[in-house]
Length: 211
Length: 107
Image (cartoon, rainbow over all chains, first blue to last red; front, side):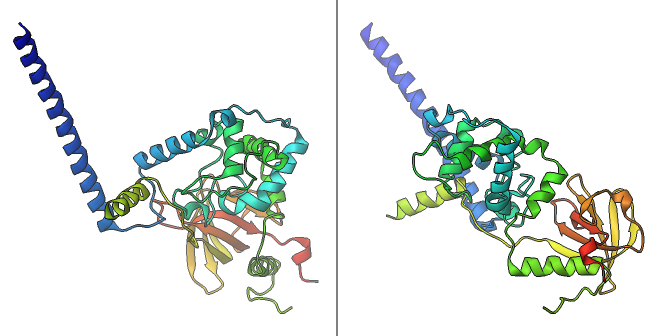
């Protein structure tokens, strides 16, 4: 009786091992094909991350935020004053990559890998206040998002004002965007180009004006 | 050591790294040759004709104030900031500026 049971167990174990081996072999072949395709195609930051990469990166980002940080609530009210403070800070520090309207449609934002996300979309708006705050303060590894805050600080009002502003992004109006444009950092070249454009629209030449 | 290098490479492939680029934007200056709700044709200061598409993110600014494509007229001076979008052949306008601000008018 015992011998019969032992034989069945052995057969069962062999089947499990064969299934695991087949699965491992399949995964190895798939990884090999993927690796060969990537090596052949080369790397470029302008590529769009695959759905698998995007899913893995979001999962990794979620794991990187401690549970305590996720549960934090914005201590600042979503008042006009707080939103204006966040808008000012966003225009000055964030818009270069994320764009004034949060679309990520800037020369840097659309050419990063991964791309700067559309902050108005559900993938960002669905994050908790604490997750947004933690990302602003601590950045995201292996992405273009730097850490703007100090380690383990939970009371940075500038970052909380940004969280309030991020929540406001889906309702951002064109007048607000125009106000932000005046606050965006500009190089001497940008300023000259802007002046040249205004001069052209005013009926002048399209050539740079002497100073 | 080699195995660790290969593993690091595989991880780097799966979890993306960042990089910077200059982008494919253009600033076009010229006069309006044709305009409709979906696009604008500009004759540039170099006398070339460039067709630019509008999308839902295109903004229009007349003398610094919000405007729309309907406010544009043929023969008017215009500055268009463009970008490229996947699947769209022509450049797409991000911002269309026209009409002089008071400070830019010749005195």
